[in-house]
Length: 342
Image (cartoon, rainbow, N blue to C red; front, side):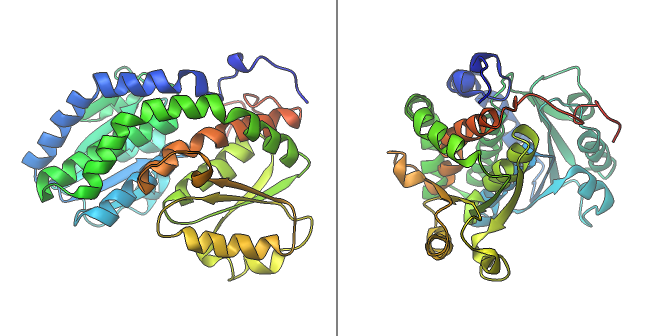
């Protein structure tokens, strides 16, 4: 097991996460309110998110708010998908939100350029509020000045989405509750950071014997399971992985279940829970190599749309310890970040 100072690891953001969320709530809400008012003035009826990697997963999660609670059309695109398969309708009533932590992801800011050419309102979201291409190319910009990108991106996209829906379609009980819980969440996150590490460490060490892990989820945890079971696991732990939708589990994946095949299940508290439980119960009949992250085990009472924010905490620890138990430093890269031409 690799011996390193976890405080020096860029991957692990649990120490700074709570303060960064508080900063965002204290300093950025007024900027969001201004953007939401401009969206209303322009009669925005269509919102496209454009991002890559973890930011795309956050956007896909926020899109669920539009899909479930409003008449507003919304879709999330990976940058090159937006450029190569550009949606037919992009006009003055369209908002295109580009999200990139560095602000330098070329396919994201090029998508913003394309959207502006077609008359859309554009918003760039990155760590820095100026001096990077995404921000410079966007009509409106927000710099969140934090490292906990999952929380930063979900907070910003959630706040924009919930506030805009309520501004143009009227107050909705579900969205009011989500907004309320977003403001209460820092205290919950602080407790989770303190009490989830040891158990997640045990699970990470347990999982380190496997060269491959299937990650299974459904509903509003699908984007989080892709972020963790594909992006994080492949890039940061260098472990082979595959993400599976529990709703489709019996159509193909079912036949691969046997002793020695390992699974990670994410259980939320939305309407899809029973679908994941069905797959989980089946898998448990044939293999003991099953790890479950269940929001109901965290000791918190949150709206289903808040679950992706809280379940992230034990997962962050899990993948950190999975990596170092494999003697791999989670910040090490062989190819990514310009090390090898792509």
